[in-house]
Image 1 (cartoon, rainbow, N blue to C red):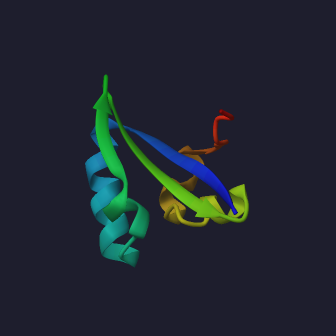
Image 2: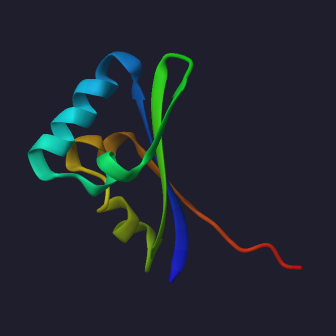
Length: 79
């Protein structure tokens, strides 16, 4: 499998309510387990996952947040 980093960036004014809504609606693993931080006026959540492809990584993100999600494939550094 491949490691992917999922990143969701939400404007600060919407972020808190969307995160709470996602957890209440579906018990979102992403919303509850991602590392959330502020960057300027945005709130950014990141999570590393080991899944077969980028589509599987995107399915971890709640539907309401998918439009704001970016998926990055990672590779191990060669020694």
